Length: 75
Image (cartoon, rainbow, N blue to C red; front, side, top):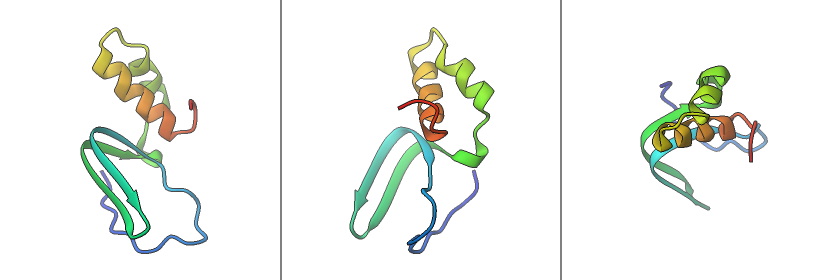
């Protein structure tokens, strides 16, 4: 995962991150993510995410859907 130490992102495009197995908090002061895994949109393999989303394993399918959501492919 690419480390990101952010400052204010005013006027920039949305930052999309697929987060799995953790906690996400958004406040006026900032965003905190505590997660088992997190992937920036630019790091996600769409084909692999699609395959995972169709898995019979619920955890794998959920992770695949989270990655597709970060790509804007599903709501």
